[in-house]
Image 1 (cartoon, rainbow, N blue to C red):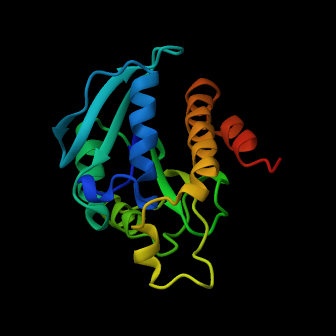
Image 2 (cartoon, rainbow, N blue to C red):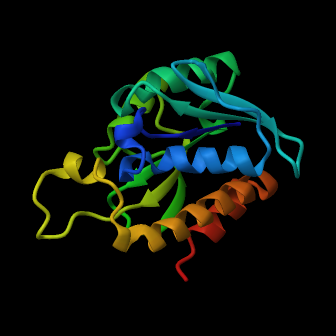
Length: 191
């Protein structure tokens, strides 16, 4: 299994909505005691044996910038001989309210350039996606969608964002321990 967190490299993008996938991968690496991430496949990568199951998991943060994420993902998938169903892509999602997350397989890109690039590079949309809800900008927002996703998470949104990040790592833990169906049922439930 390869868990891919989407984001953009560099300090300028570090705390933006678009980089939440990177945050999840960093948290998994820490929780699972992974070796440090190292440069490979146009990204930062590490491998870890999951502490509970012993399953070998690759953690990847493409450093190609979002629009070219597929280059990194395809290179890693080819090297580790993993098909689309063996990939879990963690990404920000405008179409989910802030703090909500959803796990699904396949689908369109909904305008997300990272997903477009991955689908194009793999030749298939049938990979697992963990969607992290960031909501859409309010009516008073000045700018376009790119401005919104590349904006730092505002302090007022930090508690909801933090709660979502905790739930995201729990969802991935569930996926590894109990499989996709159980993880989807529990993650996608609306409390």
